[in-house]
Image (tube, rainbow over the protein chains, first blue to last red):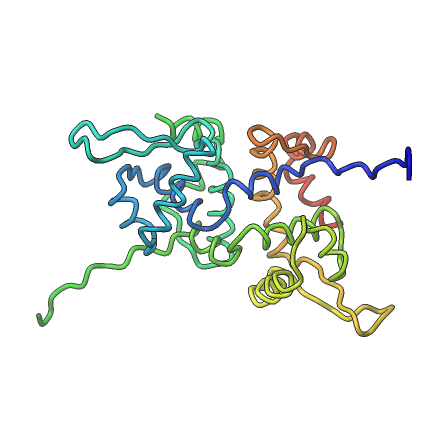
Amino acid sequence: MKNARRPKAPPPCPINAALIVLGDRWSLLIVRNLMFARTTGFNELQRAGEGMATNILTDRLAKLIAAGVIEKRPDADDGRKWIYSLTDKGFDLAPILLELSRWGVKYEKGIAPDGVLEAYEADRKKFLASLRS
Amino acid sequence: MKNARRPKAPPPCPINAALIVLGDRWSLLIVRNLMFARTTGFNELQRAGEGMATNILTDRLAKLIAAGVIEKRPDADDGRKWIYSLTDKGFDLAPILLELSRWGVKYEKGIAPDGVLEAYEADRKKFLASLRS
């Protein structure tokens, strides 16, 4: 029908937009390891990742780099290896991980490292700044 | 070797524990729809879910019910249908969704409903209480 109005597309939901990038459990565990455990190499990430298969780790690292959440640079000690780290966009996932942690402690018998959630509650800005330093 | 000390298992990470339950994008979108869009029936959930396939919706609803995140009761208007709603454990996922939303607005061109993130920032407790009412 000519001149019929098309239904307006809904505005892009930011939750859905975020979940498209973060995708699945493994992506967020990689971000967790880079943020809190300070693991930085491929082998370390694999050992830290609750049994993450090599092909999954490779795939998710590539996707997170493409999305600008993490970046990589050659390892100064061994040029054949890469060092992975979070970008600002990646560090800004900290509140999501901390809220996941709080929920996991409350309902799923998770145990957060001593003092982490308390420090986050007491002064969020200060705690988030300390993660980057 | 007798009496050799076993390496102590690390304490269960609450982030991992939460992600095991929440699993994937679809689970969190179902929780989002029950929380913010107030959709409650299977057909409504399917229409609201960014093209969620019937088998995925069925599977994730069953998992979320098993995990105690949502519950279902027969529809008073049509006994063949179910009405789905969040449990307290499900409502406690709100801060995770709001932090995902904030990140999706900042980095992924998402658009949150007017005033939602501002209201959350201004008074978290009040905002979270209002979601349940």
